[in-house]
Image 1: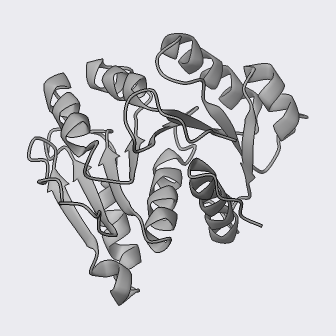
Image 2: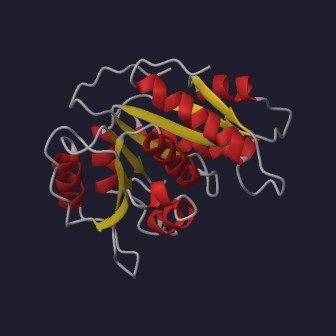
Length: 235
């Protein structure tokens, strides 16, 4: 499990990556933000994938079903970071996204500014990163204090993840593996962790149609992981 120590800033910053396309990195990042919000923390979620489907839309739809949560949610374009709140920090969720309709790459300076100005504005930073390691992605990966890599338990996903880890090199902390079921190709989560030489942080079940994550499994992992960042123990 992660430690609460940070080399850079007081608030933990968690980078989330997918080992292959469709692994569920955005769902995992959104789940972490949801769990932190519901535990009463001030959370900033950075949508670092310019080609993604838009985390602000996903979370706005989910949180609208809970008025107490919806009232604490706001979306802000990258390049226009919100003013840091005065202490004590207030519980809430801010989503930063790059609003280019053409899916243009996030400028490195915009990512650097967003992370730097938000370091004192939140109790937890979460960055959903793409698999293409452009300059902005590298800045965020290096800035992170913790990292998670979600990978389906399958041979092709393991190969793709190995290539991504090779590109990441020593950028940021070594990721913890989040293994996504079901198992294929005679692999299991423990074997996958050994192949990738990563610590196994958790195992997530698939939903009924297997194309989505099982919500209860996701929520349990996210709550446990978020609590561990602050030294708490979740049963």
